Image: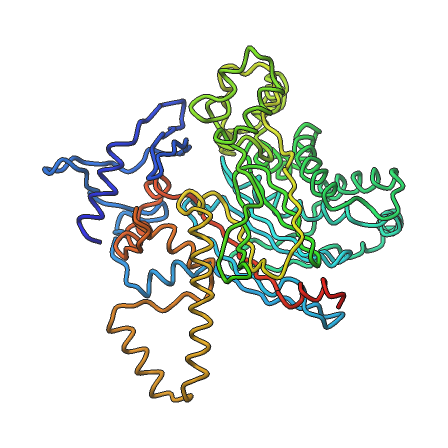
Length: 529
C-alpha cells in the first residue's frame, strides 16, 4: 500500500474522529468522504494512532479481532487476493419456470456481500413463493448487532406468503396444524454462500405466524390480500410480533435471550416481489431499490423505486412532526438523526425508540445479563411521546416494460459511496463487457494457445480478471473509486486491509442484489403470449 494512500486514510481519521465516552461503550462521530455524519457504536476503543513527524498519523501495528499477538496483519494484497476477498460472497442463479416451461420475467440474479462489521450485520434473502409463483428479493441492514436483521431475513417472507394465500389454502394450513399433519410448503429458498441455514420456524415464531393467518381467515377474503396490502401488513405485523415475543414470559432461556437481542437491535429492510410484469417494492429505512432502463433510442436512465427514510427526506420529516406534539419539533431530529441517535427513521426492532420507559425497565429487570448479551441501554434526551420509530414500509408498484432491464437492491453501504446513476452506469458497463466477451469468443477459433496468450497479455498489463458478477463490480468500485470516480488499486487494497475497528469508520457492510429481467418474456405479456 502506498504511503500516499496510508497517509490519506490515517490523516483523515485524525481530522474527523471525536469520541464521546458513555458507560462501557464508545460512540465515534466522523465525517465520511460525502460529508455525511454518522454515529457508530464500538464495543472497544479503536486502534491506537500515533503522531508522525509529517503531522499525520501512522499505525504502529494493526490486528484483526481474531489475531493473536504473533499474527501481524499485512496491508499488502496481491490482485489475486483482492479478487478472492471481493468474490467470497458471490452467488448467481438463473430462473426458469419448470412447471410451465416458460421463462420467468426474471431471467437471473447476481448477488454479493462484503463485511465491514464482525460479524457482518447485513442479511439478504431470495425465495420463490410456492403458492403464488412470485419471486421475493430482500436486503436487510442491521444495526446495533445482527440479531434483528437475521430474524427479519428469516421470517418476513413467510408473513408475505401467508398474506397472499387464498382462504382455501389458509384453511388447509389451519387444518394441518389442528390435526398435527405436515404443513404445505410455503417458500423455496435460494441460498447464498455463507448464509446461515434458514431453520424451520421455531415454535414461538410459528405460533405468531399461525395467529396471523387465523386473523386472515376471520376476514373471509376468498383471494387473500392484494400484494400492496400483504407487504404493508407483513412488515408491521412482524415488527409487532418481535416486540410481543420479549414481553411475554418465555421459559426457554436461549429463546428469551435471542428475542431480547432481536428486539433491542434493529434492521432496515427493502424487499421486492416480482410476479409476471408486476413489480412491488416495500421499503422501511435507507436501503434502496432502483431500475436500470434502456430507452428506445438506446440511452440508459435510472428509475428510483424507493425513498430513503432519513432526515434528508422532507416528507419523512413532515410525517414525524405530524405524529408528535409541536413542542418536540426541534428535538425529534437533532444532528440529522432521529432523537440525535439513529439515521434511519423507519426500522424493525429498536424497541428502545418505540416502548415507553416503564415498559423497557420492566422487561430489562427480569434478570437479563444485558452486558453479556451486548444489549445497549440508552434512552435519548427528549424522549417524551414514543413510539418515534415505525416499521411501516412505503410500497411502490411498477408495471414492468421490455425496456426495464435490471433491478438493483442494496444496503446503504453501497449508496453511501455510489449514486444511483453511478450504479446504473457500472451495471451497464458490466453487461457491455460480457456481451463483448461473448462476441470475441464467437468470432475467434477455440484455440487454447490463443486463450493462454490473451491471459498472459492481460497479466503483463496489470489488468485484473473481469468480474463475472455485477454485484461484485459494484462493491469493487464502491470502495475502490476515488473522488473523481476512477478506480485506484491502492485505495481498493487499503480499504480491504484496514483492521476491523478502523474499517468501520470508512465503509459499512455492503450487500447488493442485481436482478435481470427477461425482455422477451415481458414483451410477450403485452402481446397476450
